[in-house]
Length: 339
Ligand code: GDP
Image (tube, rainbow, N blue to C red; front, side, top):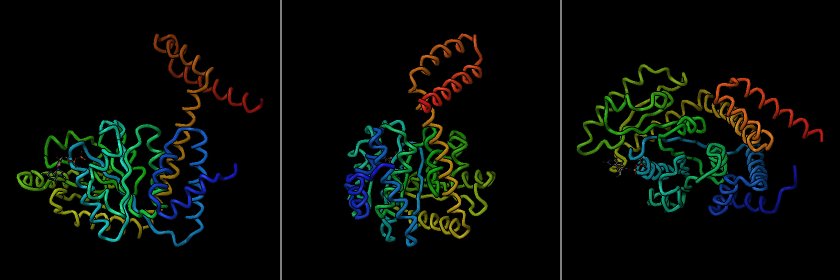
């Protein structure tokens, strides 16, 4: 490995000193696709991981994922939930994943105005979603940076579209699904898989005229969860209702997340899950990295163009084409390493 640059050392010190501007710069660094940036980011992360590994007094951290359809009240909830977490003596970071990037293009202003009170708190750090780049890898690494800067609770928010919520569940310690106060067909309409991976379902907007339907939704989700196989033997997924707007149920929701944390820690499941996640992401990373390299290989691109047409026309099977492409790619690799 090459020598650590002055810039990396400076970023490292900045993060250790809990300097927000260095945290922001460091996250930008891990989001960058530039080769020299990538290398610097890896150096920075290694320094952080090494220090954590050698320091037994490392403060325990808690990563919470929150997903739900647009308009369900995620930002309103994070605002009141975040303020409550701060009142419990924690420092909170909020990362947003928005693959569609429809929401104000993920601008800083956009995310700050979504959580106005929380964003002004000394012990809170809100990071807008990156507009591009490898989301999952970035988020994983951004969490590590936030934790190194002393934010012991990290909220990772995602809109309930596409693959993002299952991806988030694989990054965090606890996954929370937020749902609107409606039952029946609405539950059917939710992607089945997402309720299955939830450690806690929160029915929001349990206030005013919506209180009655929130109660119904609570009952329906409770019975729906009964028929699902729990993800871990140490925790039975729960359902609760809140009003993010009036703060009703916020403290209770935090208490439930704390009992989850305790159950996971005491059983040893907490560390086991994190270890499994690291392994999982290593393999996901290998897959994306290999595919990126394959796609950027000039000779492969030509081959792929021809094969795609043949497969399209039915002149060649998909499997044969895939085998050829992979064989050619690995052949190129060995040629390159010899020369
Ligand atoms: P997000 O898209 O999931 O982040 O949702 P927002 O937090 O932006 O909320 C969407 C809308 O729902 C806004 O008009 C909020 O004022 C409203 N809202 C959020 N939480 C509550 C709540 O607890 N009760 C009621 N009645 N409205 C809420």
